[in-house]
Length: 149
Image 1 (cartoon, rainbow, N blue to C red):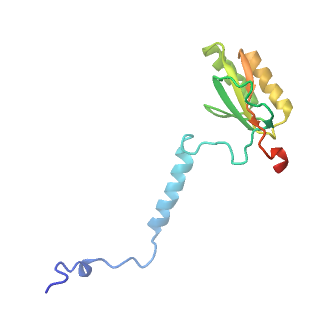
Image 2 (cartoon, helix red, strand yellow):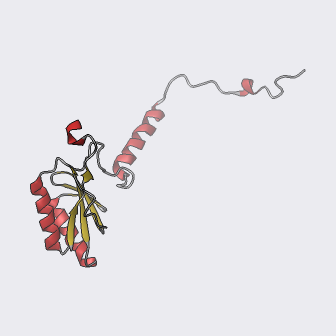
Image 3 (cartoon, rainbow, N blue to C red):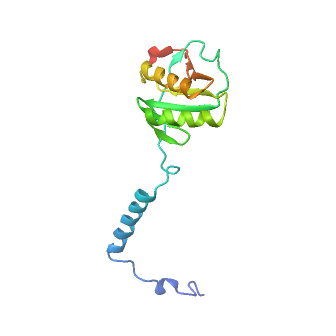
């Protein structure tokens, strides 16, 4: 009885003795291409896992739909739909956005560590740009409250 009719094991090449230089050259080229040609859609900046909205009682009472949403994880760092901007760039972005459409409402999702003065600066920029209103994203108080953390 024939158990190995094609004898494939005898026709295989032996495994390489070690990694040659081409392995390391290919790895270096992959890293170089990702560094140079990386897309902001692939390696986009985002909100960290420690991003938390402030908590307040009745946070959902005055909620209304917003047309533009921005996120503020830190001072002078704002995530808009076009990417990461600072406050000077945010002023220009808000102005161009308000010129395209009228009656826009801005929703600001600011981390609880962002100073209140920065929130006032953002509200002032939105008002000067021509936004109809500014809303602050907040979470309702949880059962344990802020004392848990």
